[in-house]
Length: 256
Picture 1: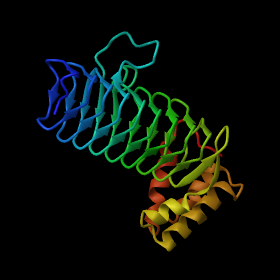
Picture 2: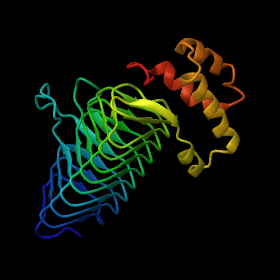
Picture 3: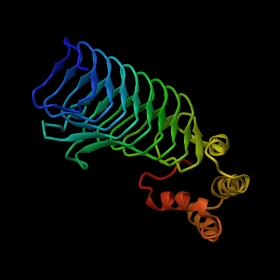
Picture 4: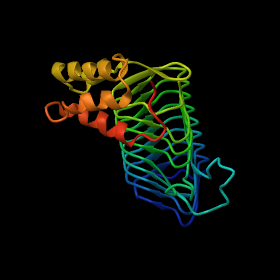
């Protein structure tokens, strides 16, 4: 399963059925789970753990040192879950000691060609990063979020679950769950209603989220008052809870 032209360091831990293509390089601290396929000319290095059933295409660079001038060789890590697809020329960096020391990618994500995930980022599950989408260090991205082509996210920003970032958008503040963001800098455009339909949200749930969006972004209420008004529906409309929890935990402020 390992091409004779690949270089796999003696300390690397690969499941018996891992495939490694020609001219790929696997470092001594790398662990790769069952049924994962690594294409040709791929470099996987550092303290990198990759789960099962992943597909890594040619010329990807996985687990290299963070692009951070403060990094001085500390033993940081990259952890990738299961069933991810990582396409050509994708780059994913390890963490830094200025954060938790780990970059984390969950399960079932699609990282298209030339995407970049910087140090200390945390990606949830079912995230899609379209070609040339880039996220800077310490960015957190929730489940089912989509980052369209040529979008960029500033360091320390958070993007909530089910959010949609339009192409060529520059995210400089936090994007709440369910929200579609567009522009440079990013501004709220609408609820990601089409994405919510595809994921099984009911018509009532989507209507509730649209009403919440109007309160948050179209009522001219100060943020605190908008949150207080939405909080009254928290128990009867549980789909609002991720939105309200995200707002409460936001540190960079929200796109407004």
